[in-house]
Amino acid sequence: MHTAAALSRLGTESAFEVLARASLLSAEGRDIVNLGIGQPDFATPEHIVEAAVRALRDGAHGYTPAAGLPALREAVAADLHRRNGADVDPGHVIVQPGGKPSMFFAVLCFGEPGAEILYPDPGFPIYRSVIDYTGATAVPVPLTEATGFALDADAILSRITPRTRLVILNSPANPTGGVTPKTQIDALVAGLERHPHVAVLSDEIYSRMLYDAREHVSLLSYPQIRDRLILLDGWSKTYAMTGWRLGYAVWPRQLVEPVTRLCINDHSCVNAAAQHAGIAALTGPQDAVEAMMARFDARRRAIVPALNALPGVTCSDPAGAFYAFPNISGTHLTSHAAQDLLLDRAGVATISGTAFGAMGEGHLRLSYAASMERIEEALSRMAALLDEGPPRH
Ligand code: PLP
Image (cartoon, rainbow, N blue to C red; front, top):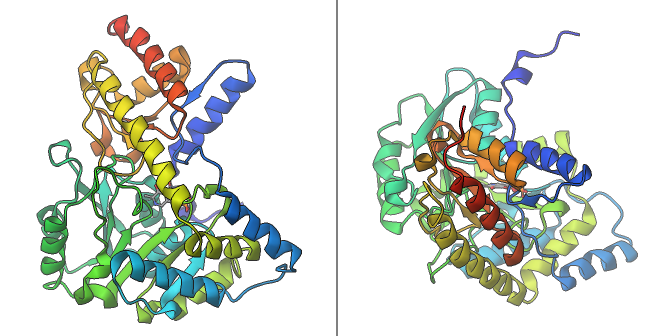
């Protein structure tokens, strides 16, 4: 076989590998606390499940339009208007099987050898992976702990060259929980006006997951860049629907037709019942989302002080999402060594910060999408292990 070179450039998401290792250890009878995977541990709200069941019973068994059911695209536009005050043409909303495919297609629209694409580091690993796949040059924009891992407008703008085609933004962020303040977004948008050749992919999949009464600032609220903005969001995190595979992006007019063609070539459409569930999620009661966030917040308030109490570990408050990103450099372990040690010796699955880019060295990602009891168990096992002192080589 002679496979395409691009295949070897495609990266991966270590969370899935850690999940596989953790499952293997569980199958061997080990009690593993999984703080590795980034998915809510709650059930999808009942009325959403019910809408999918009803759709199947009512005969929603066929293909739908490639970009999604018109009612779903309208519900997305109405939801975005409600939340961000932005006018969104439902015809620009393309529904896909999860948030990831919008990311992949956005990068496919711009990436090729000679092109440069900026992405956050540490950041969601798929950005870098798919940029590399296209042969474009992946340009990391470092995020630092000092700013709470917020995006820094100057750091982005100073990396733009005539070859830059796309800038990827993510707030609230995975893996850091960082939230970018409006002042930085204002400055970024103002700066981007000097670079009209640069498009923006704003990954706002955690837009409903903010703490301390923070308000989400969507890139959608900047009309100056609407003609080159791809806004990614979805149902996976907000409604605990990761396995349903349902997400969307709002595309600039110029990309709606080519991206619809990508959908037709790739998956035809998202499964119909999931789309009906998506309508119910957006148009139905939102109290389950609020209840879930209250639970996440309580866990956040427990996990951060517990991490700070560990020897060699410091952790700042995540402002959004459901990840803690502690600094472990005081343990004198590399991130990868800490990940392996915690899994093998303490039975606690976490993800090495380096899985999210070189700037993640010295950090671990802990997802607090686990019950308070399991989080407490994980932290007490981590304390017992780290109290033993630095491992002897
Ligand atoms: N964007 C970010 C920043 C994420 O963390 C994730 C999932 O972990 C996604 C997108 C993808 O979400 P989905 O499961 O809907 O593909």
